[in-house]
Length: 243
Ligand SMILES: [Zn+2]
Image 1: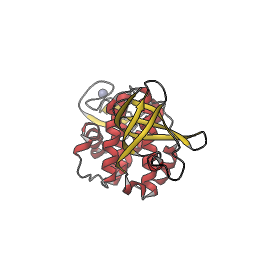
Image 2: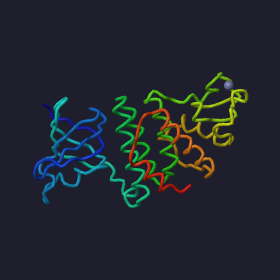
Image 3: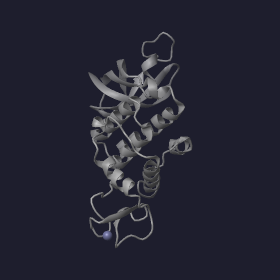
Image 4: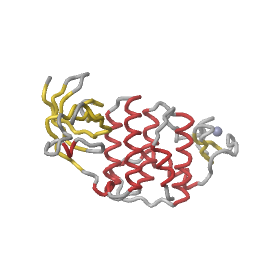
């Protein structure tokens, strides 16, 4: 056992014994770990406010590798006040939290955590939550082993792209186009930008509703057909979406 300090995000919590909780924290330095927050449910306990889902903080932990660790204290880095003030944004937060946990369980690359936190910070800065969600979804496909090839036709490699199809698994050229998917030129260009953009460097997003909708629709289908992930909160989120 050793005392460590690490940045992390509380993915979920479970009540434990009378007034304690077990926090499932995705940390920057130790991956996904279980941490007991003792007596955190009693009113005067200092751990109370930091022992909640969606808390992004620096956690001081009595760390036991492969076992349950113990929370000593935590300093909140960002409370995501703006996100928490809006029911739609809480829908996104819930979905992205489940998504990052599922992706991380399949591929414990720390980049998955960094992309997630960077996206949340951009949503907190009032950038479009749907676009950021789609950007993250595209980037996560690589970590799920079903990454999109956005540099050429998925069938023949030709650069003469005219469509993208979830049925065919990516870009299609004129010769391979089978009337599936969408052909909106802006959307084809934008989906590629989504994949290559450095999220931390985004300062504004001006994407038309049609383009957003087509890309979101494509990703919904692609996730369903190729990733094997089933994320409960996605349904709820889809009902909230306003393009
Ligand atoms: Zn082709």
